[in-house]
Amino acid sequence: MTTTLPQDDLPAWIDRDVAYRAVSGRDPRYDGRLYLGVTSTGVYCRPSCPARTPRPDNCRYYRSAAAAVAAGFRACRRCRPDALPGSREWDARADLAAQAVRAIASGVVDEVGVEGLAERLHVSARHLQRVVVAEMGAGPAQIARSRRAQLARHLLDETTLPMADVAFAAGFASVRQFNDVMRATFGAAPRALRTRRRAAAAQPGPAGRDAPAARRGGGTRPAATGGRPGGASDVPRPGRPSTRRT
Image 1: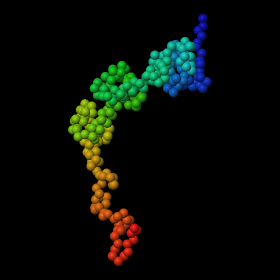
Image 2 (image 1 turned 60 degrees about the horizontal axis):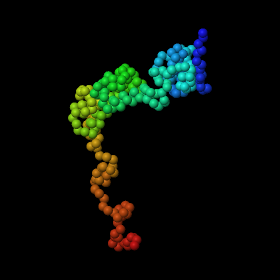
Image 3 (image 1 turned 180 degrees about the horizontal axis):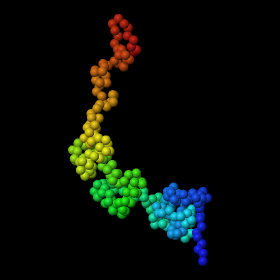
Image 4 (image 1 turned 180 degrees about the vertical axis):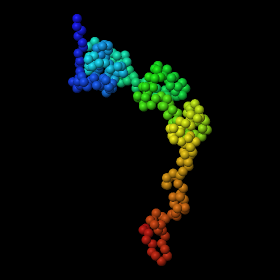
C-alpha cells in the first residue's frame, strides 16, 4: 500500500529552490508568508524555526497555516507557527529579550545575577544569553554593567555624594569594580569625571547671557544717548540752531 505524500501549495511569487534557501537560512522575513511542512516528522514550521533543517525531499511548502493543517501537519512546538503575528508566542525571542532588559533596568541582575534572572524568566542562563545577544547585541551582564555606569555618571554629575556612596548606590559590588568599569566606559576615573563636570559648570556662559556687563561692554556701561546713532545728543550747542523736530 502506497502512502500519498502531501503536495505543495506554494504561493505564485516563490519556487521550491527559493523556499528551501529561506528555510535553510532561517530567514524571518518569510515568516507568515510561507509555511514548511516536514513529511518525516509530520509537523509544520515557520522558515525561521531553530530546529535542524530537513532534507529538501522531506519539505512541503504552504501559503498559510490552514493549508498546512489541511494537508495533515501539526504545529511545531518550538517556533509556534499557529500563533498570531504580533503576539508574544509569535515573536518569543524578542519578548524574552524585552522582559530581560526590563528586569535588568529594575536592578534584578544586581540582586541575583544572570543566573537568577534566567531562573525568574524560566529559561536557562545559556539560552537567555544567546537570545539577548541576538536581539540587543550584548549579553545581560554587559547591559547591566552599562546601566550601572550610566547611573553612576548621573550621580557624579548631579550630586556631591562621596565616591564610595556613588559606587554602591549605582549597584557596584566594590569601589574597585566601580573605578574599573568607569575607566573602561568613559575613559577616565570617577573623580576626574566629577572634576571636569564642575570645571565646565564654573565657566561663564556665552556673551550676551551670563557674561558680566563689564566684560561685554568694555568695562563701563555707556551713558544714555537718547536713541540717536553714534551717541549724538538732542541738546543744541551754543551758537548753532537745534535740529530737533517739534
